[in-house]
Image (cartoon, rainbow, N blue to C red):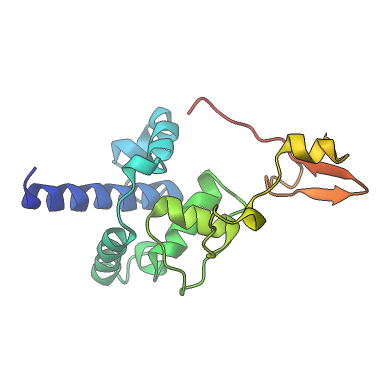
Length: 178
């Protein structure tokens, strides 16, 4: 693939990602778009969007998004978002992760998947070379007497983990085929 073809591929893919997030976040956008109209395509597309091998550099997406915002500043909802991070947060909260937290502007985001990671665990860089960052396994916790119990899912928050009197309550996580 030539440099020109590679750049063209990144621009086209980036525009698709942004249009898809806008279309899935705001139903009045892209009324005639087959991606937004086809409910059977939504789940596989969202799953593919967050695959590690499908990640586009955040800088590419952000440049394309800023161009769209500048060109459509008066259009609702495109002009509503000043930052791609805001749109990504709203998209993820609506379709995949209701518990995702906003990211401050100082965070250095590498791609969409990294945006989710930062929204869950924060911007600090974890190194696995240091034992202090590793969470003990369930086996290790059971060996020291921790009891595991299914937690309350009413809050719809998969990180709603509680630990009281040696009992760790963890909400059930539903994992689909994708």
